[in-house]
Image (cartoon, rainbow, N blue to C red; front, side):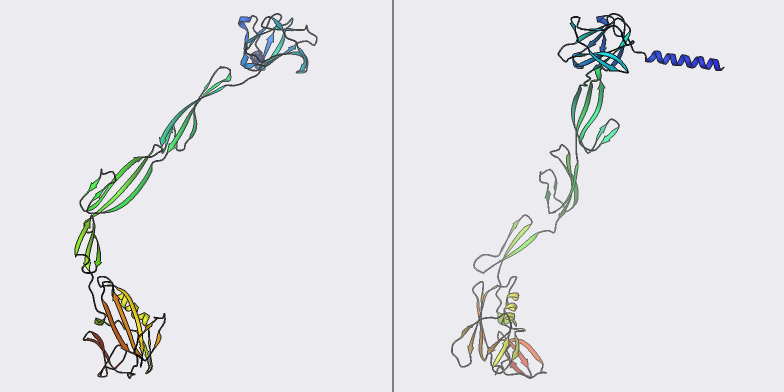
Length: 395
């Protein structure tokens, strides 16, 4: 049994050694060994041909004899040119090396020897790679074989191996755009029409529709619209004018109505515009807040009432015959005894004048106060006596 196993092992080793043994170089030029990569070849007595194509040049051929002092070999290029050898020492033995330079021809290299030996051929191996590019465009994703791609880029789809190590690489240049999705809400009065005129809703209610637009990147922009059509939606603006400058009427532009109305004039004597104005009363002077009076007036004459254009105050001291202009201060101010006058001019030309005495008789505390309008002016009833709004007793 052991003997049989030993025989099998010896046979296996022998087979492996035979499998690894180098090939012989071609014996004739038509059977020359084509060189495309570094290779070791056996040579024998006589001619030994190899073929060196231009694309693998320059190349070197190293001759390594089996004996230390074998016959000197000869190298002939294309059957005519003898190449000079250079002595080398490789694999622990002496040898010779030839160099075939680069040019634009394919050469046949003949090693003429007189013994069995081996040669090592080392060409210049340059691989040529050709790229075939194909452009594709996709939106959101692209199915590349069994893989889904979501980003733009260059993807190798196929590599073809050619003789001598050359390759053809197929490249997909992929641009991935994005579908854009938007939503918008709009409210329309009575009727809605889309910007392109293709969608029209003319009944009250809520509607939805989508619009698709092609973007610059070749993908869609999809907008979902929610439209609410209202029936109680008219916008009414009232424009006031002074009587005689226009007529009372309406103008409508779509859902916008303009109503033209005349101002209504209301005399300041019909209400208490001096409310909160008198702060303190003395026999020789009165503390009043005229800024408060003006604020009361301007805040009252709004809307359809004729607005105030100007308020002017003046004062005539006791014993004097002429009124002097009075400047309104930003805080309460003392007015000496005499007469305080006010002139109020309105936008449409109406003028209201009034005056008040400022030598005020002090009224006792604890008395019931009643205000009312009498003959166009405000009357204060206190303790059975009548007073003006500044506190002067009415005889």
